[in-house]
Image (cartoon, rainbow, N blue to C red; front, side):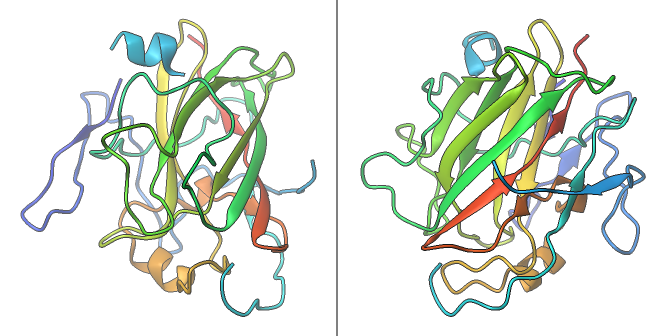
Amino acid sequence: MNDDLTPDATGNDDLTRDATGNDDLTRDATGSSRRAVLKAGVVGAATVGLTVTGLAGAQEPAAALTLTPSCTDGDDTPRNIEGPFFKPNSPLRTDLVTGGVTGVLLNLTGRVYNLRCQPVAGALLDFWQADSRGAYDNRTFTLRGHQFSAADGTFRLNTIVPKDYPGRTIHIHVKVQARNGPVLTTQLFFPDNTRAYGMNVRALNARDRYINRECTITLGPPGANRYDGTFDFVIRVA
């Protein structure tokens, strides 16, 4: 089920599809795939089985919230490449802002649903990402952690907005898995008007070859060096 990563001659990630062709990363001119059923997001509010085995700057006026994927029958969250920086056996934790981590804070919440739009309890979510300098910690587990969805399918992640690095826009990696179900490997992206570390996120998004706008986090207006965001996952459970 896992995506394979093969660097090309330029060092960019290259997606190798499996025999079923399920990666489904075909986009139209706007960057959307066939999964175009969206809803307006409302901001408010591990890898044990998966890995043991195997705001700085001036703020621009708040724009309309970016659309995020809706739970629709038979329409699961798009997959994306794993990338080269995944590490198994991440710590069980919902707070990735540990000692030494600095940056624009992000409080990310959401739910995990099955294809019938029913909440999935006990789903494994394993997150990893770059820091505020665009670097991954490949020696320890900084900005890495797994957790399990609650009885109502909800999850909460306290982290930071990552910075871009050469060839990639800002994104958060995640693997999601229902108990004994297949693994969804994907990436979460940020709206064009995200403000952090002086980045031009609109331009970064426009040139990223792996961005999938259906996997964009819905962000509320920026607060005091922080954002609140939401994203719901729809996964296959068997």
